[in-house]
Image (cartoon, rainbow, N blue to C red):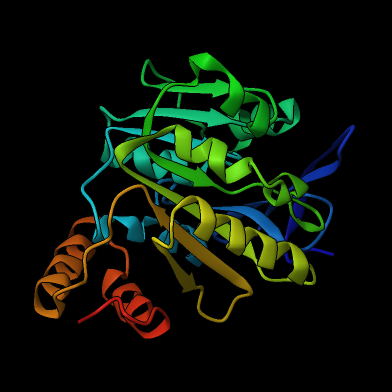
Length: 258
């Protein structure tokens, strides 16, 4: 079923998790060909999947975060990237499957230090916990083998997220535009209601993913020249195609540029 060598297979109450080694990368699968994580074998920090790079486009509108809450772990690609580039950033990860955490540590070089914490529980439960704290970024990437997790369709899910954001906070969500159109439409309505319209969408090129950005502050209109210069600077610093993402954001979000 895979384009490589199956190096590990395990099951938990939620289904199968398989690890596959290809020529230049290692991937995690939840019992289907869809890649939950890809790690480059010679560059464990690099972001191999385009949607993960798209999720960093929040940097076009705000500064590097002091704290990040990641809902959903997979193999921890974004966690590795953030830890490498922002070593003082406080990163909190919530993952409901203990097996995912175990395999991320064993096969995907999951970070382990004083600024990195993993909580094994459902995202919605963690968000309700008074000890959860406040974050500059909340990154939502919760999927199962069938696509987006049903929790994202709960009316209060994004309201819970918004309460955990700082005044400069941004929520970034990876949305899979597969065969659950009603779920996707409900998510979009919830985001616009909770964040009073301060929402942008960035389709992932040649994929069926869309990344949504919801801002806990009034989103200013972009000044094209300044934004392009910032995108170029970010591109040089992080090796991510921010100039292309900026163009796509301006193309797909009317009113972003005046």
